[in-house]
Image (cartoon, rainbow, N blue to C red; front, side, top):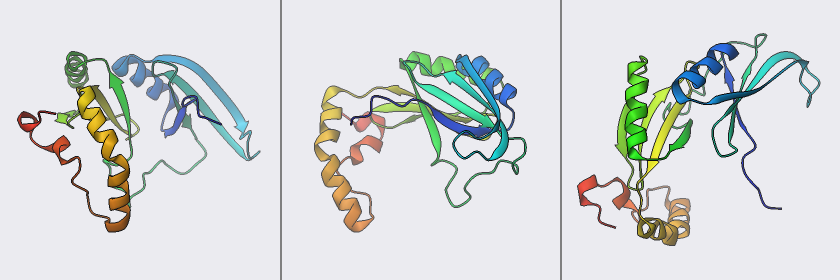
Amino acid sequence: MKIKQIHHVAYRCIDAKQTVDWYVKHLNMNFVLAIAENEVPSTKAPDPYMHVFLDAGHGNVLAFFELPTQPPMDRDHNTPAWVQHLALEVGSMEELLAAKEQLVAGGIEVLGPVYHGIFKSIYFFDPNGHRLELAANIGTPEMMQQLDSVKWEMLEEWSRTRKAPKHAAWMHAPEAEVKA
């Protein structure tokens, strides 16, 4: 078996309509499907929900569940807020900067662009508190090959030491210093 692609990624939301409206308005996603049940199909638990699906491009689907009978949404307080996020790719730096302008104009606080060596990103939160990242690739084939050649060695070193290996430290060096 080989995975073909991600079918959908699902998160919880506070309000399904508000969430759909926000993603349509701010990220230009199309609303593609809604499913509502009073019973969970997999577990048969009585738990009414609204499940909405948005087109994230190229066959990728982002979905949300509104669960009105469950306790209020919260996050894992043992995990820093920056860790759990959804990163979405845009086509160019121009698109990334235009997206930032549009988000800021819509009253959304945006961090970045942040330089990551092979891509630049902006970060912000949706109305449910989910952290989102928009990323524009800037890496060269040489950079990607360099990262590919050290991935297993880095993973093995991390596994032994739990300290950041330095094989790809160039990725977060100041942008002007990187010449891969």
